[in-house]
Image 1 (cartoon, rainbow, N blue to C red):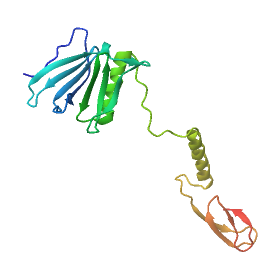
Image 2 (image 1 turned 180 degrees about the vertical axis):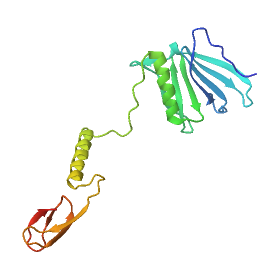
Image 3 (image 1 turned 90 degrees about the vertical axis):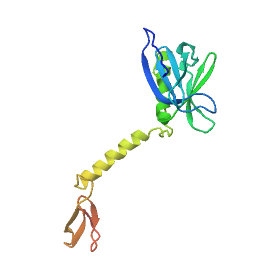
Image 4 (image 1 turned 45 degrees about the vertical axis):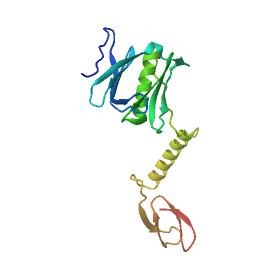
Length: 191
């Protein structure tokens, strides 16, 4: 018989995942983890799907520090990422077979939302931009746009041009909108 959990009348399922590992050295990815608005529920299953019990962890027992629920990403002995949840009476660890940190962050954010009533702070990028980098990028973009328009090209590639020197009449080549110097009389002119 498969493990089952009966929801309370005021309880709803928020997240659910199969192929979860919970336990010691001999544990495998056979369990199911359910997050409701009241509990974190672990349906323990055997290798053949047989029920090994239901463990309920009340969310009102999750520790809170600085208005953040104590649910974090931890490391297993094999260096894989896992979900660590700290309760008033202990700690529980859950490992997901797939999904990586994205899935763990989803669980952490949802647990935090249920426990504290607030959305979790946005995950910070591992590489921070330099202060003012956005402003510099905008200025560079505008500068390049001016050069493109002056060079007469909308695609960004300057167009070649030819003409005659206004001072001595010698042939001149270069790019349209660019200032070139005459090879014969050294006068500078724009094509």
